[in-house]
Each structure stands twice: as structure tokens, then as C-alpha cells.
Image (cartoon, rainbow, N blue to C red; front, top):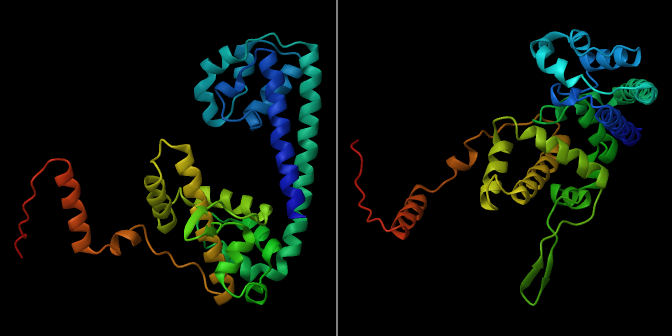
Length: 288
């Protein structure tokens, strides 16, 4: 059921994109000013366009909340060539979006009912940064809660999920570290959760930063994608330990990696780097 909900949610996103395409064809550029055409302000403007209103200033006046500060820009964005054909297509798209949202509401209610016996484990999982109630329900639906019965350790769970590096080695040479195939549904959930987790200060964000810098920095999309898989792997390991021990997530802290540095080794590394840049380094102990 949760997999089907994800499919319906993707259909809703696609339908909103199609609605945006119809508006673009009509020269209506609400999405260049508003964050989403599916929000209340955008919906009101589209409904007014369907009903026959064409004046940009009048349409912009339907903006709500923070969008009212953008009325001058909206007035210009709403001046187009919206015709009867566009009105028909927008009506059909809006009706379909409403239908999909009603389906999502019914699915959400059913999921909540099905999750009632697993609420204690769900509450434990949402202590992990980036994991919300729906994501926790999806994880439980994929791997269950009696985790040690099927996965004796976290490595086996990570391998089954497909979030651990492949092990292709021959004659002492490692040929590929490409991830193994695994549970694609759980992979996508964890990658989405990982992107949410790295927005919060803490261990997972530090882990992401560490690997992004290792593989090329923030200008490299490849580095960011590889680093987010590392975070997703860390999250499935955390999930195993939480379900196995029935204890909430323990935050290691944003300075976790800094605390583990060996001062003498780090000193030697920094000296070597400065000398490679042509500097002569003299060390002097600070006063006690």
C-alpha cells in the first residue's frame, strides 16, 4: 500500500507539471513568481482564468499571504493568451489532481490504521534526522520490526538494501565499487530521507560534508550524489541498531569527526601541506 501511495504521489507531481505546461503554452508564467502553481494562491488564479477572467491585475489580487508582496510581478506573469482550449485542459488537470489528492488522503488514513500495532517502533525511527512518520512507516513495511530474525547484523541489512559497495576483487586488485542491486523501494526512501537529514546540523550532515569534500567538493554533482549514498548507508545501519536495541537515535554531534582526530597526526599533515606550498614552518608551543 505504501508503494502504491508513492506511485500516486508521483502521478500527482506529473499532473501538476502537465498543468504547468498548459499555462506555459498560454503565456501564463505563475511558476516564475510562485513557488508552486498547486498552492492556494495559484489554484485561485487558475480557477479564475478558467471562469473567464483575463485581467492580470485582477488575477494577481487573488494572491494570499506572503504572495501578496509579489502582486506587481504576478500581474505581469498572468498576462497571456489564455483561451477556451487552455481553460478546458486546465479544468481536466485540476480535476485529476483533486482525484489523486483524494486517493492520497484515503491511503494515508489506511496506512495510519495499519501502523497502529507498530507505533512504538515508528516513534523510535522518527528520532533519526530526516525520517518522518510516513518514511518510518515505509521502512517498517519493507523490513519489518523483528529485524534480527532476518538480518543478524547491520551489514546484511545494508547489503540486502543495496546501499553497500560491491566487492569485485581479483588477484588482489579491486575492480569496481559499484553498489549492489537491492530493494529499490527502500533505496529511494532512504536517499530521500538522507537529503532531508543533511539539512540538519549533526553527525549525518558532517558525514555528508566529509565525503563531498573527499570526492570533489560541492561544485561536483557526482560528489554530492556519492556522498548522499554514504549518508543513506549510515541511516540503514542506524535503523538496524534502533530496531535491534529498541532505543532511540543517539546524536553523535556535528564535531564527531573532529573529536576523533589525532592531534600529532593532524599537525604533521598540515605542516606537510604548508611545506608543499613553499612555506617554512616553525612550531612554537602556546603558553599554558
